[in-house]
Image (cartoon, rainbow, N blue to C red; front, side, top):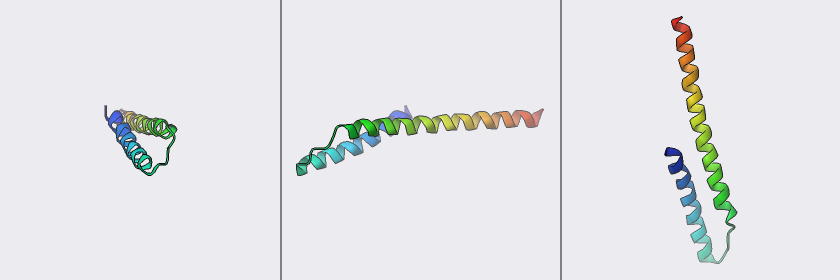
Length: 67
């Protein structure tokens, strides 16, 4: 859920750029929205993956200290 909000935040920023460029008569490529969506999605997923790995590693270290 939080990854979706991160992605939507980035895409909304790009849509604002689209509106501004359309108002000036410059036609931007639709690829920028697609690539921004994918980049934000990957960044969010990798951040969550690293958070999960950090929890797993700290749990294993605590178990080793107990034993």
